[in-house]
Length: 444
Image 1 (tube, helix red, strand yellow):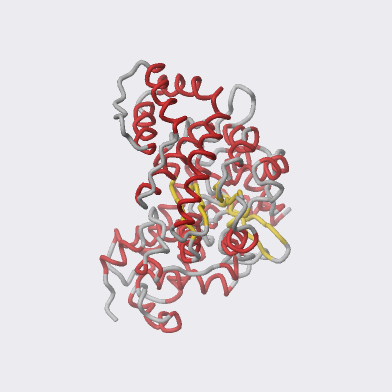
Image 2: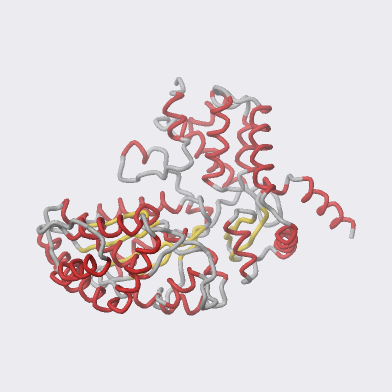
């Protein structure tokens, strides 16, 4: 079976999630549920389709950047669609300014994406409240925005947000105008958009409407004048309003909120009493440091599936020398990734940029060394101290400094039958600084 080099290169692109509704992408998918500590997507799916199909639900989903959340959410979308739900999935990074987000931005983004998706289904709803609001907004901003007399809701929202994206000053003025009207905006979204949309969708044979807001975990973790961080303000302080949208919702939220002192408040205000679902890393080692063969085997399959998607999983291992000089080189790559999906794909991508397969060990070591130096440059002395504490305790504290470790991928979270545990990113464990600390630590 010859290796299709161009297809392999495209399949290893670390920035592209797998679209599970696409048959060609589905061939690359590996189900890691058995080693990740639970069937997370199944739980989200079951809540919507089995437990509460008629009553709106709001579910929270989180995990490390690049651990495969988007791929899993796109799998959820595909499975919900199979069960006759209309799903609106969107990446908030494409429609929101992640460094400067407020509650009205999120509400307008959801309204815009839902209406655009419905328009594609020939369901055209024109909430009268929004028509009036847009006219007032244009007058208030005193800036030319041609909304057109018959413009769709999605077009109106897109034009206004595009205009304000160009200017932070305009964005602030729009927010000041919309903030006191948040309740009315919510009411209009629910009554004039979602209630009518659900009715129309059911007439078309759909069971309901689900909105999946991906990448909302990427909002900037910056302090606000109130003393709270932006994620705490959005998801905790204003969580009840985000929850009040009358359709099934799945929000991705920053992992750091799980370790916040306000995590219980988050669970109740936005989660409605239900804790967020966490997608951990794929364990390639156990807590003790020994290699975990089941996890390693699945990571091998992930690499081999990208090269040979049409070959049966049981037969792929015999083709390993088409991509690597031997199995040990593939294992070296899988183990150094720490079970982080995007990092492993990034390393593979880098190998492909160096040479054609089969990759020799020297090429793999060069790519690992570059990754190690790049990650280590960013670590300051205070962060090293925190990393050492995590290694000793296998846990992460609630302090905001720990959030930096998680967000910067200096430490990884895993789950097993005993619960959550944390370990240093293996690439950082190979730095001279870490090795010196480990030696000193062993002697004391």
